[in-house]
Length: 203
Image 1: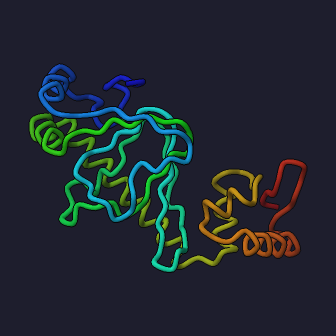
Image 2: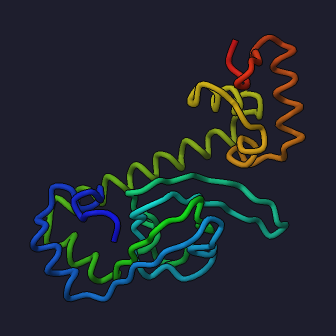
């Protein structure tokens, strides 16, 4: 692996020797992916915990009509599929794609259950990770279900400081580029946004 166990948020503060002892007795694998490779497919079984040890990935949802929505972008070290592996359905509700060259450490589900059962620090970390991911999803749902595209654009720029690339922003916001271009042009005309040599900013 290209990261230490102590670097992974899930295991911080835990009994590393005890954790490594459990890991040594359990099946696991480390896989590498190139940019654009599919790591997990929406609807496929999720029976293991995925730990992103290097690189970055993004998660997207695809509707039956083929519409795509980018849910999130995650960078190492990060735990993937934390809320899915112990779910009743046990499937990936999103497709996870490598955003760069990356490495994934796949941990056995029962091994993970044994660790969180025996180590209170890891249990607390796991609950925090699930809670943070749930809060993030709640925020994203609010943005897409209740906000207009104009509000989403201004929120995006408010968080990032600038909108440099319309294609990239359209991908992140889950809209078609022409729709984003029209909205940005309207916001510029209204005086909400200004454009300089670097991109679009809030006025």
